[in-house]
Length: 318
Length: 241
Image 1 (cartoon, rainbow over the protein chains, first blue to last red):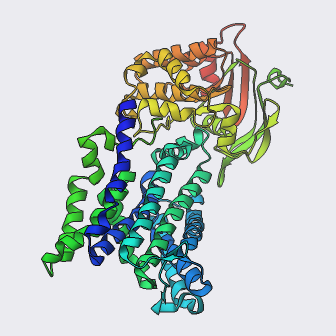
Image 2 (cartoon, rainbow over the protein chains, first blue to last red):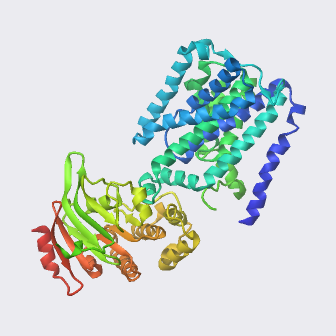
Image 3 (cartoon, rainbow over the protein chains, first blue to last red):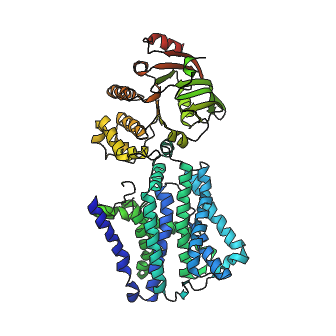
């Protein structure tokens, strides 16, 4: 399909088209756009584990929190400039991913895995609250203004450009992973784990790898959170946040990279649109999610896929 | 020493004991397969035929005994390692990837062993024209017989040295039983060694070089039928009576 390959290159126009955005947006709107960007890696990582690997693991908020706290602690306690904390945040997220994936290696599946991974997230929240000298306890910590190569990111517009680079990087890398042997192994495990093992796929190793990659990408999202919000508290990583993140991938499209991007944008933007109907915001937001799940069980990405084959995820075909 | 325990075998299993928590199934099974040889396992339900195959492929860990494949000990190794050595199993449940297309199922068959994937797939499609017509179809939408073809085709993608077939004719319409029998005969002509568990004795004897009868986890009879055909009635008697 050489024609499609050319059209897929056009995806690069999306970030390019976004470049002048800070010229047109006020600080608040720019903040909302940055929030959207932050939720892209958060959704991508979640989707790799739940959508592509197919395991009901709800520890995403743990990876997110670990990433945020890693960046926060490194910046506040050790004075490390923010941009140098991004990679450690991702690595800590990957580590947390491996830890959360251990029950899955012991054969824990479905609701049991869901509950154990939920517990993992809550356990980390307990750590954030109790480990006061490092995390600042329930009040959390204020993170110094983020800086990159010695420049401080003073405006939301500055953060936007750094975030855009990170998001493009995460999308491209995850696309690579999903289209490689790794992605094919994830897909095989999702469809039939026993058959995957019978085809010579070391399923344990690939389950752990999916968790690690998911945790890494989400951890970087956490680092972006620390830079964007400037304040890291345990309450930001609670069950409500987890449900929001789950909504991102459900509305965007389970197992779809494009879906993670769309979901992040829609779920972040929707409450802003509903602001006009004061008092009904949550209701409308809930209705939106229900409507998408009812009428588009494969998410908004499936709607685009119907419009043009360029939007179809191609994780298997080489 | 039984003749099938002589050296120069492709696979030699000795004293295999295996089972599931709280229940031993195999009580010291000896089994050998020479290159290009077809060995059929016969036996009543619960006699341990499938467990024997699952032990060879690594899905069941043997409690005792040894399995040597091309000179290397493989007993207790994980399934993916055994697969990479060239022992490929087609399980009774066929264990396909139901939401993927025929072609993707085949391609995943070559995941671990690599090779010229496209050429291998075309080769399978030549042997199974019925699959070629349906290469973009989701496997869950296919009949049992077609799924069995996908399962065998996918196993071939792994370029097996030893193919383990668990009830290849199980639950299939008579037309498909014939077709599957023809396919197995073709694999035999290509000199692929096979261990086959089969309830259909007529089919089993038509393709076997040798057969073993299992009873309560022990081999009660073994016979080479290359020299002369075995008596079907006799075999049925020794399986069930």
